[in-house]
Length: 331
Length: 287
Image 1 (tube, chains in turn green, yellow):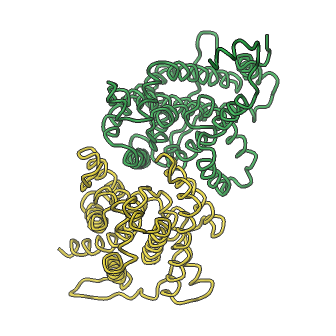
Image 2: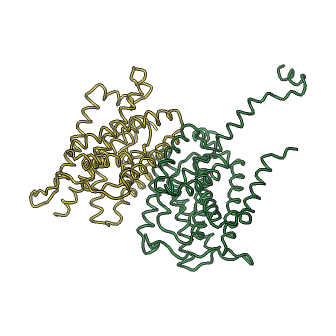
Image 3: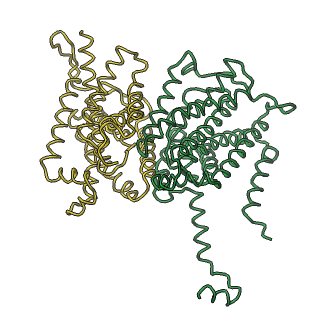
């Protein structure tokens, strides 16, 4: 019975994550972790579409902003209950995502990337200019914290951390279930060759659209959580620089891997917090890093570890139990 | 009526700049099938180099522009040699991400060296001329004329010289070009050089009427993408015509629709085009 199995490792990590507020007792780290968990949820959304289905979407900061603004507007301007507003925000994001996906997915490869880049920019401009609805550059202030569920309140930093953690775990479980199911395999088939997928009878448009809507759902959920966590949102959260940040988290962690988004987001958020003195110039390091990673480790940290494990397994001499089995294999 | 003519003239000016940027983008796309997101950063770099040549060394506007073209052109060559050549066999996703990485780096670099402030570039051609009761600034006329001259030179280079035709050959078929003995790597580097040079010319021309700042390339590059989709990815006449169409629709839209939303026009145009024709307006037969 081995103790250092993958499963035990994951369980240990989850327990550690749950115990962190008790051990850490440091509000700053707690704030940072909560924030990076929120970003990680959005990155999982991008990963589903770009990593597994092969469509690089540059509009997801826009969907993140739609989720955040929907929640903000529903709670601040129509005074809706937080949980209803959260569901509403996700539904609104999905609905917009559905309409955009319906059109955007007619395009392919470069056209899709450019199209979504423009869609993201339009979303940003609309939020920025439509002052009557979104308050424009002044931003939305006074978004309420998550409401109580029965006896559980979300006033403290620790309780918000737990809330986000639970959502993150749920997202990871959903992602795990998706990519290990026929649906996930279908997405990967589309990524590897859309023509081939179509020939074997996959309705590519339907599947791509599902993946797109799901990924906008994650982005919208992250946006809504962000709005209620920070309590203030401005149009900047939909800008292209946020999009490129998210993309970088995904790439460094590992595009098309399950653990990549979390690893990349945690690593880079913590790194850029510690490199705060060069906040403005952090791209001097991260920009070339992004380029180098895509050239030498196209599947990021998670992919590199995975490859290294496979290599090590190959190098290990095969375990010889008895000569008979070898003879059988040779024969 | 005066307003209309004035706006058409403005459209012609903006359109010239857009066309030059889009030409560089479309050349690279035609040859290597890379949507070079870093092109906007090269544009920005061109503006800064011209500006610092003029302010630091006090050289003539045209000489400063020349230096800028050379530097940014070489930058393009470096990008091809050390980034995009390594990714030639990689899936198309990788080129895009590498280009975004370069874009982020160059922007941070510009901010690091020149600061985040907005700079104005003074041009020796800020006189105002009166033609038939309409006022034009000299710089705007200069933009229009220079853009046309550059386009004609580029056309002659591509059509009439041996080196130019290797670029055309490679854009038609990479394997074919390789078979008849064209050195693909050289042509790719040359194309990146021309592309960078065009970006530098465009920004040096446009900077006196706009401002120079680290994010100046953002909108321009997005619009250049709109243009080359409008004109067909990789098509040279398409980029020129598309640039002018966008320039006119923006300047007219700003006057007759809304100045606040003038930047959105380009993107709405693109969204409409791609909605109707997912592969662009003048897409070639091959997919």
